[in-house]
Image (tube, rainbow over all chains, first blue to last red; front, side):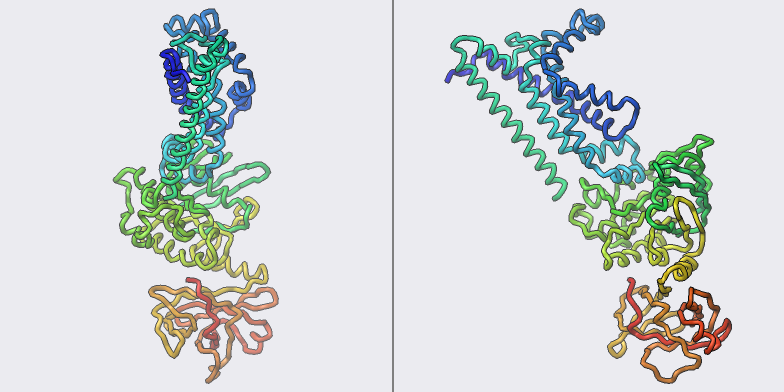
Length: 229
Length: 351
């Protein structure tokens, strides 16, 4: 088996960077959105739910293309982004954004399922004991949905590692800039004699995903242990 | 406590329309399930918003739809003890206990944690995790958690309902001791007349979302006796148990009672059905009943085809139940005197 080329190693590092960034950025956001869906009632809620869940059913290429035409130079927000000096298309930011949008519904779903099982009387008890809304959010709701949040974050991380369609449209496939593992594998499969390298990257991909699974399993267990001990 | 409430609330098909004003330390809210007791509790605590009306506690307006006042639950300082303790599962007993205590300004912390922990008898539980506690222990910790937040009023929403029969009444002395020791007023929500009699002085009777009546708890018990085939139950508080010939002797007012039940320190509460008391015109000299008490008749009241007789008995009161024919033969009337015979086995321990 061939060893990884420097370019491959770069792809691995980029993949991890994108997945970590996407997970960290979307976790607080996902928690907030899950809270809104579980606890608040307002007109237009189902429309918002639809919009958030749309990437789950849309082909990722479509998501990428929609992002491209809204955030691109000639897109709706293009001039604004250019004015702010932010370039998203064909950059690592674009790769992160593509992962965030595609993985977000999975994250929200997971947190939401956990949050819905929290007995409302815990929150009521906290409020009558003098905790304000914000206080009860951080001392009761967040710890009690900790496992669900963790599960959602590992799903998000795994989805980001595998993101292909939206990334290739929005961020392109530029070696050492936006080329993540799936994109590199795609390149190798289109190159005669690239099978060995593709396989090597596949192996890295398997190992990475497995490590994430183990890590999330372990932390979920320690979270549970901390509660029951 | 001086609580003035006049609110209306619509929840789906259910409509709560409660107007009442109560003064006193221990008030009961009595009614069948679905009568609006819990909705009232949520409204008082600020956990549900009434459609209109006002809630004023000790001169402080907590809710007023016209003045657009709606104090948030955390600012109302009304503690709630829920039916199922609802201790936070991710915290230890200590962190649960101090959750509210840490959230009030130091100057307003009126309760000493050490004293409270001692009164509730939970010092051995402090380092434990919540999931390992029994139902009764949970409810004691939940009460401690609520009291430590120095509430102006405690709402107890059927706090005994989730506990099994044996445990149920063992927790009452703790509840009463805490309320006495720290002088916290309480609104006790329940559908059990027995719990009402042990915990409260006056009772708000709820029915179909309305306050039907406000009356002393004793009257509630008698009304309940008249309403169904329930017999009236005397709650007898006795002291100073002493063993005597295999039985137990207790002090009850000026009298001594002999029971088969062994006693424990402090107040012992027994229930005695009005049916289990026999009346004699004169002292029967010898009887198999171990307790022969000279009493004077305070009055009688009708309960269907039976008659309730209220007796004054060495500074205490006793209600017994006989048929009108017997009353006529014995010439029972207010001011007369009789001898009440009670078997030593007739007493059932409450706590």
